[in-house]
Image (cartoon, rainbow, N blue to C red; front, top):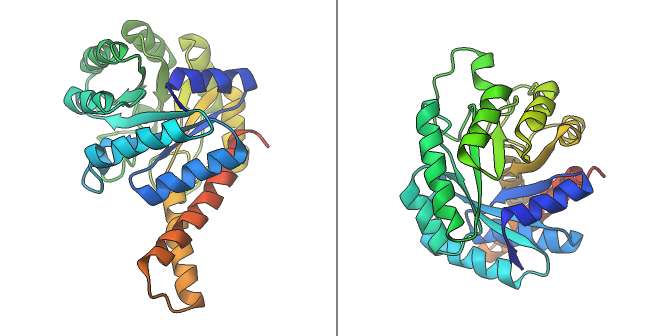
Amino acid sequence: MLVNMNSVLEYAEKEQRCVGAFDTPNLEILMAVLSAAEKRNEPVIIQHAQLHEPEMPIRVIGPIMVHMAKESSVPVCVMLDHGEDLDYVKTALDLGFSAVMIDGSSKPYEENVRLTKEAVALARGYGASVEAEIGVVTGHEGKVFEVTSAEDAYTDPQLAADFVKATGIDALAASVGTVHGFYATQPKLDFDRIEKIREMTGVPLVMHGGSGISVEDTQHAIRCGIRKINYFSYMSNAGVKGVKKLLEEKEVKYFHDLANAAIRAMEEDVLQAMAMFALE
């Protein structure tokens, strides 16, 4: 069933866990994620990131995401991830997305506030939830931000509280030590910062760059207040490994055999991630 982000996050708060939010830029990943969620019989968030538009236009995959969410046996939020402009946000809402993330984190603070407030006002007319970001989660899949020191990339708790109050967002993506993409070294999460931001903002916190974090650190972050974790890179790479394994085992003549191998491998990775998010 199709639900908004607030509904899913209320479940996460009640259960004192977090919910996985998986970018699904193609049908194979979408099938893997929803199959895993149904096997575990728990809510899930499926996302389309604006930066994936060249790989899959939102006007193609968006209606499929909404349809499959409505047909699912579990609550599914269909969300725009890292929306960069209001036109794209409106496109997602018009297609039936039940939540949007507006990302003005690379802009000056006042401009981020202005853009986010406009996105909130727009989304409210559709009954959709809104996530926004303050601070910079580096390694944004090819995007480069000017960060002069590690401290510059972390979210300031007081600024986060001011931002939430000024914008009226439903969830906050905070920079607490993760990066997008693959990790060259073990990330160092700031757990005290997570607790402080949660205490001062009073809204569910989102951790981007969630794939590749150790189980111990992930679950510690959840206990500190993270309620949504974005997960993509390692899941997608699991699909690559599934295809490689099949090709090593036998000669493959049909593409759908490769696609199915990728789906199975990604579904297994998602199942493991969802178990971790449930603190199992």
